[in-house]
Amino acid sequence: MQRGIVVIPKSVHKARMAENFNVFDFNLDDDDMKLMSSLDKNESQFFDHRDPAAIESIFGQSLKALRN
Amino acid sequence: MQYVTLNDGHKMPQLGFGVFQVPDLNVAEEAVSDALDTGYRLIDTAAAYANEEAVGKAINNSSVDRDDIFVTSKLWVDHFTYEKAKQGIDDSLNKLGLDYIDLYLLHQPYGDIAGAWRALIEAQKAGKIKSIGVSNFAPDQLMNLELMSDVKPAMNQIEVSPWFQEHDAV
Figure 1 (cartoon, rainbow over the protein chains, first blue to last red):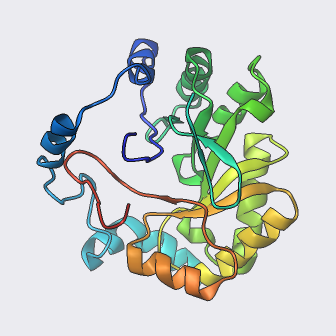
Figure 2: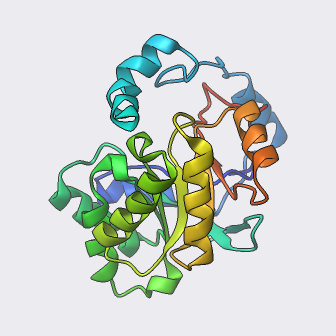
Figure 3: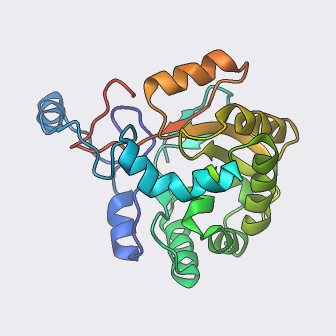
């Protein structure tokens, strides 16, 4: 949020929803932000949107429906 | 709640609640009700999440005013032509049971983006959607859309985490 990004956590547990909502009463300082920045692996946790095999397996059916 | 102002002037809560991978309609409805109780005012769904009905029910049954809730949904790739997108927008509105959607996104950068985008612009002009945007677009794909159309996307919703920080895209 300190990067100005809109964030959308998901949970179906009310207690975790409340925990995730509890972000307005603190700030990370520059050192913490730098430390967070160093964690970047530059790798999606889902799939590579430029990988033809991934695109075919996830979107193949939908794109086929589009062509018909 | 903190808000960001989109490029079309609309304000959007900076913290929201998403219902990706909650296909059970009862679970999704209860989750959105709980989220609204907790104080969330941005709810993020998509046609592809197959729970727009549940999201709409929770919003319509909530004591929170509709105007105080910001609803995002997304068009799926199998509707990415001009004609199919028009239908997809109406399908989302019907499933949600809402008069308007605050933000509607092209969910993925595939298919007939130009046609689908034109349908979103028209729906925005008709008042069915307040803000229009995209999701999962890489910087060059976003740039192409901006070059192609007079209406710039108000949002590009992408994956960001400590492990995938996307500094260029952000």
